[in-house]
Image (tube, rainbow, N blue to C red; front, top):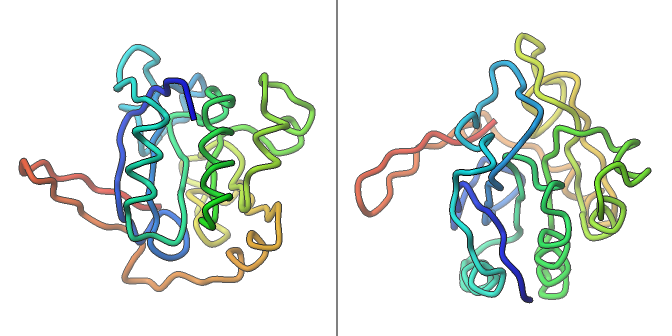
Length: 184
């Protein structure tokens, strides 16, 4: 894998950003400006850290996880890089979940360059912008308008997994003492 990706944050093992133990990558940059966005710091296109895909892959494959979750920001804005990462994760047996503020029907029409190809590498897609005040209506969603869409057999299995109430949010304390709240 070659190339650079702009990343807001990486978490090597999360229990709340999809089913099972997950390596989570928050992509940097999002044009949607959803009111009440949980990840407002990830919206700017200038912030974040440029990471080599190879380095990111090494970190993923060294982690003890079931799958990878791409969220944001907006992963589809870096579709070429995200697709390369998802392809390699699938090749190595990890399931692949992606959150997007765009709608599946639009992504299938390739409204963003590379979106159709990226969809082919995703097991479970959670689509739609976050809508503040619209309570979640499905597993792993942030608001009721968002849909959980299986795009593979693995995705169909992932969709049936129910999370338990006690792992809806988690606090992560880094080695340098930084505390981060994550989850849906």
